[in-house]
Image 1 (tube, one colour):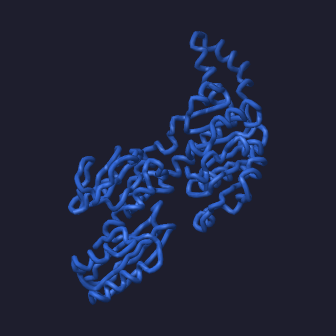
Image 2 (image 1 turned 60 degrees about the vertical axis):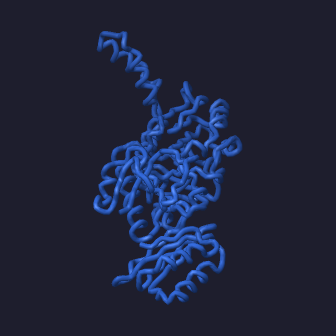
Image 3 (image 1 turned 30 degrees about the vertical axis):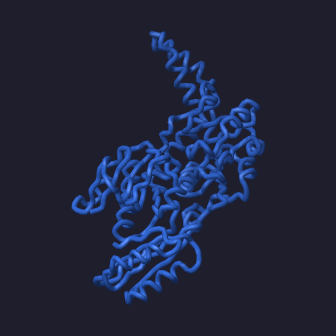
Length: 391
């Protein structure tokens, strides 16, 4: 029976995917095979010897020390795209808040609580409403930085609103390119995008390469009065540089999901409390995707949407074959050494796949008969092999 340890409140729709006759699931459990979590920080926590995988019900994995887990051969999964629609809809709200005097007008209306005459209030509002006039989104230009699952949906939404859309993504995958509407104009660099957009929405992950990609230098290229939206990660924007750009009149507004002290009490900043993925549907979608990916890995050794291991999928060989998986440091000769172990022990290999990603490699091997404990021990002791499983 597989043991799954949960952190945070994981949607029951996800947890119900695990067959109870084959899985034990609890927040307190010994010798876990896998974790399922949302925002719980694993930094500094000991890694159990039995742990083989971590499934993050969400896209970001900055709460997981991925490098430490990679060294132990633990596969870290995330759920890209599962919360994309929730974030997309909040971006739409941000665009509307940034184009019309909605928030200011609502605050003004609430400030009239001392008035008791409805007729007088209506007259006053008719007189003052011009203070909250704004612009329509139709015909304006939106820049989308990061054209993955969320960015492509934001681009499609903006096109449906009649906006012009330009995009920039130096790491655009083939899959994402197919998903992207053809009307999106690709830009070669961030500066050229910032210079021609009325609105810019950020949708890149928090990596070392994207840290403070919006900074004092990049903001110098921004079109005057541009509205910047950040519903991705706080680390990709230098908040102090944003404040300086707002004060200088270069940037028009900043709308984000990541409040910081320097951003509060400003009329040109709308800061939300990190609610981009806070919908019941998004939490359910993330939990279901995390559970399905984890089960396929535990039961079949397949990997999909891992942030540290390569994507690997191999159908089970027919009959009574047994599956062995092993991970190793990505150096030459390891696979050949392991295959020679099978030969020495007279174990017939039916099918296999080998993939690598960066410094790690992962292998699935179907064999004709149940391997002996001695064979598995020999494989585990091969130099550069990190971990071995028999499924």
